[in-house]
Structures are given as structure tokens and as C-alpha cells.
Image (cartoon, rainbow over all chains, first blue to last red; front, side, top):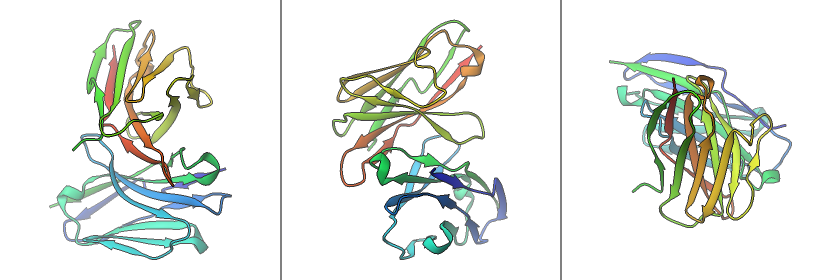
Length: 116
Length: 116
């Protein structure tokens, strides 16, 4: 069965620190997508990245970077030089080909608190 | 601009009343929409898949008679919480599926329901 684990429930850092949010997933499919979403206090989910299972290249977007390793079934997210505006709950999610990629399974989320 | 809207954004009601939440796709027609529920400090849990022109598909443990879903058009799905009770208080989020190679989901801003 598909499952997404975010072992870190809450992380507190001081502004300008780097922080890595961990995500480990389980799936029997060889074809799947992984996602990261940000949920600020307003509640609206903000899409950050989508990665398919055949693309293990790491990605960098500004201060954000993602490390996808199939060997360890992990898709970790790093924020470099964190800012107060990064404070939010971050969710990792998985969709599989056997559901037509229609069902998103979310991890339990990691609450990131960035203090000035 | 926003791809998905939800109305209302928040609602407070008395126990025993029914509440209707609308989810509208603003950018494209969607045969498939999803309804999620998120309890405070918890993850998003898929409640049901809303299919235009047919009955919704409910996830295990979700009472279909309590959470009525109507997908009357290609741009509108409604979730009605019938005879609401305090334990139904939650954040309800819809998403709209754009069919394609990976069936991308676009999330609405959510509706916060408080049942007194």
C-alpha cells in the first residue's frame, strides 16, 4: 500500500539557517509522482514541486532544493537561508499509476517555524 | 489567478443543521473533483472522488449519507454536510483534476466549518 512518512512533526530554526524536511515513501508501483506542498496559516495549499519516478535529478529553485533518491525511497526538501515567510506546514505527497495518478496520499506534514 | 474557488470560506452553524460547500473550477471543465478533510494539525485525508454525471466514490470510513456530494456540472461540485455535529468541525478542501498525463490537481482555498 502507498504511504508517505514525514517523521519530523515540527522544526524550529532561526532566520538564515538552512533546514531539510524529510520525506520517505512506500509504493509498489514503478511509476509514480511525488509532490511537495506548502500550507501557510491561511490554509490554502501551495504547490511547490512535482517529480516523476523516472527523473532522479535533483532540482533547485531559488532557495529551495529537492533531493530524490529512489534507493532510499526519499524525497527530501531543503530550504537554504530560511526566512520568516517560510513558516508553514509542508506536506509531501504521492500519487501512483494504479490510481491513474488521481489519488494523492499525503504525509502527516512538518510544521516549520522560522524565527527572526 | 485562482483556478479553484470554494464558498463559503468559513461557516459556523448549530448542531443538527446542514451545510453546503461549493467548489468551482474557474479555468477548465473538470469531470473529476476531490474532497479532502483536514482536522487541526493533521494531514489532508481524501473523503471522496466527485464524478460529473455519476455518483461520487467515497473512501473507506466516510459516511456517504452524511457527506452528500453532487457534481452537477463540469465546473461545480458541492459537498453537503447533513445534520452536522461538533465532530464534523474541520477544514474542507476541494481539488479539481485536469486530465492529462498525470492528472494534475488544483486545490481550492478551503472552507473552515465550525459546528457549535
